[in-house]
Image (cartoon, rainbow, N blue to C red; front, side, top):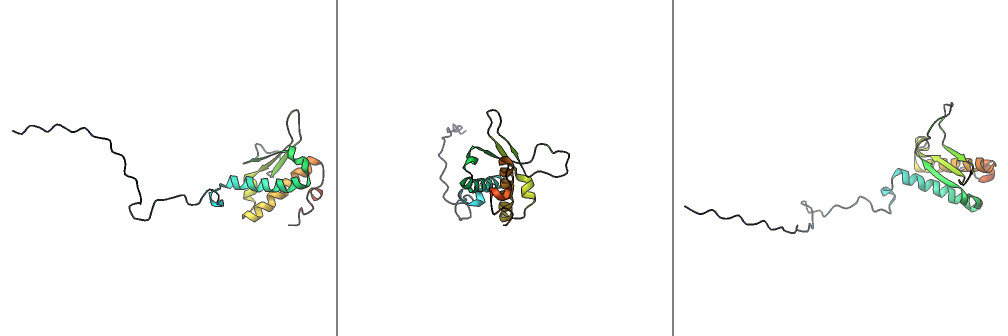
Length: 147
């Protein structure tokens, strides 16, 4: 009768580095590098549009550097009207800076592409700045409504 062979202890092996996938096409990588717009989410792209619009206006109105610009998905509550606001402005209060809020989803729904969205975002930002400063939108940005 043969004596049973004692089991060998299992030695942990280092995993082999994978050089290629099983079809020989190379390792998968990201679809697009982070600096390419494809890697940006819709919310990030929208924030960039608002930031571009604000920077454009700050050159003409330096006092806007004290205003806080926010992007919110949707308005919290609606008034008794049937229209959904695209933005709102809140004057400065006790220890609070003035705020301009731009609502992302209502703006996205009203536009078909990035160019239309950029124009509408700029118009909303101009309107809210005008409301905050007590001016007409045309005096805030002479190109308002022309594009």
